[in-house]
Length: 171
Image (cartoon, rainbow, N blue to C red):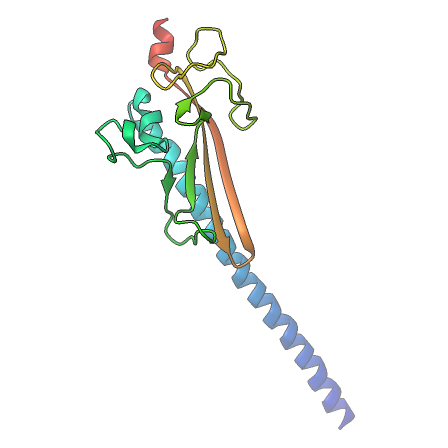
């Protein structure tokens, strides 16, 4: 009788360990799937930017609808949704696109390590306080995806530098 009880105890502990392992595996699989969705979404934003006219990028993806290339409120703007990801509390979207700006102006003087700024954006070899949204040759961009998962707040970020190679080669 004692041997049967010990066997049942060992079996119960083994089933508990197996159950918690399976539960943790399912949870981490979901988190990995969410991260993969965030990576794909951020990468797709960057790739879409590569397919558009270079000098429309800032106006297309900044936070102001007033300067959209096709007229007010015609561009996607600085925020985007990602299927399968839940926005953080109080947020409508999980994704955002950022440029080095002061207000609505593209600025060379913004001190931000993510953008590699301050930096000369228009190729005049000066870093000044002028608005560079109409004459940039280099466009720093950060695409961030933040969402709420089972394990709490999660974040993925891509920082890159877009360059107009055609105009750069003409100089």
